[in-house]
Structure formats: C-alpha cells, structure tokens
Image 1 (tube, one colour):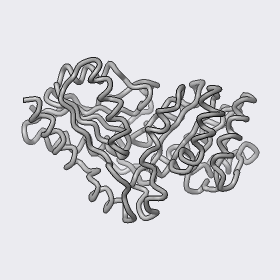
Image 2: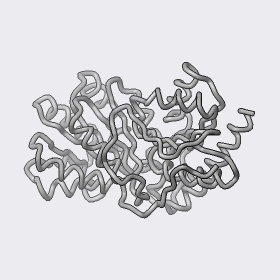
Image 3: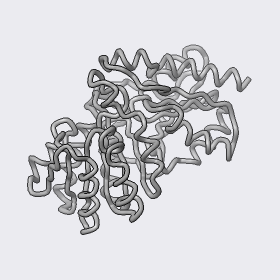
Length: 320
C-alpha cells in the first residue's frame, strides 16, 4: 500500500529562531508582551524582540531562578511575560520558582526553553536538557508544547500569547526540516496526523517527527503501513488521537529526544493502558550523552529513523 501523502523534507530554520522571530512579530500588535532573558538573547533568539522593543526587554543576567520570579511579578501586573533561556537552565535552575510562584498561583507566564535535547552538540551534557518535558509536565496547570518545525513553532507561540495560563514551549538549536506549509490547525491539546497507516502508529514530537516520517517511508517500501502523528501538545494530550491509533492500527511507537522513562512515551502509555491497551515500543534516551557534533550524537544515541523502524518492528512482532 503506497503512502497516501508524501513529504519532501526541505531544510528550514531552527525552532529557536522561529520562536524569536514570531515573538517579535506578535509583539507589534500586543503591547502586553514582555521578555526576560538570562544573558543568552543571541542564542535564545530573543534579540529580535530586544531590537524592536528595548523598553520591554529585561536582561536579568545569569540568574534563571530570579528571572522566573520577575516573570511572575510581571504576569501578576497584567503583562504577558516570556522568560527564556536554555531549557536545562530555565527548568532545572528555576524549578522551585516555576513551582511556587508560577504553577501554584497559576500565573500567565510563558517559559521557552531553547537548546533542548542532545542536538545542542558540542556544548556537552551539562548544557543538554533531557528532563525538561517531564519536569514541566509535573507542574499543575502548565501547558507543554514541543513543535517540530518553524511553522508549528510560530503557531505554538501564538497559542501561548492567546491562552491564559502558564506555558512551557520546547525549542531546539539545529535547523529543522519544514513539515508544515501553514500555521493553521494547531490547538492546545491537539495533534496532527501527517501520514495515514493501518499497521502501526509512529508518534513523536520535536525533531523526531521528521525522523518518524522518514521511518514511515522506509517501512512502506517493506509493505508496512505506518501512521505518523505529531504530538506537539505534550500536555494536555490529544487522548482521542491516541485511542484512535491504538484501536485502528493496534500498535504504537513513541519517539522523542528526551529521557524515555519520563517523557511523552510515558504519558501516551498511560492513556493506552486506561483506554485501549495495545503493544507499544519507545525510542528515546536512557542516560546522559557526551560532547560531539549534533549528527554524531543523534547517530550514536539512536535519534534516527533506523531506530524508529526497529521499534516499529518490535511492536508489530508483539501485535502478531
């Protein structure tokens, strides 16, 4: 059975750059948007906002915990603060403040963590955030999004602006293939089915979405029909899409550039176990990585289509 849709994955910009550009554009028509950054604006790409709106940009220095607190204060005064740093810094260093002064009072703070996962490359494991999604999801009231390309990132930032409540949006350092041709169709708690399939469903977020598309194309050549679903909304989940995939394809693979023990896969498995049990397999990280080029690390730690293909075959073997 040939794929119902094919994707020509063309090179695009990094999701961190798409975030920075989208924020600066949205701020032109919304004076409530303000930005706090931890002395990393050229890396997080909030420098685009700072250039346009210097009076609404606050560089707090290398002090992510304080930055989160400042963001909470701005939110309490009616602003829409975006606080941004590398994911590993803003989530890990700022977690107590995220818990106490953002999640507990349910303030309208938008947290954007860039340089997530191991694809940050040569900066090494101290800079790699592989726990950020699990920590963000543990915070009551938080919406957690992990877009796969520049268009979906722009859509997610617009959702964060328009939706009252705390957000965590995950962004990456490397340039990402373009998947979407429009920013339409994204919503909190949604997902996007990119390819239809009858034998197995490949679910992913972030850079593993394009790898799942490549995996589906390779599986199709072997006569295996794979559905691909972009689970960009990690919290809340699109439970309906998960249940439908379990019922219609009977096997699910979840792939992510995150700790496999505590990310999207665990959340999807919870829904599957509650609603429609089926064989599952998981592609993700099990330990800290090391320093190397992004490509070297993604190859070594299995963040490639080949790992998704192998996982799909494991799930299919159990299905039979």
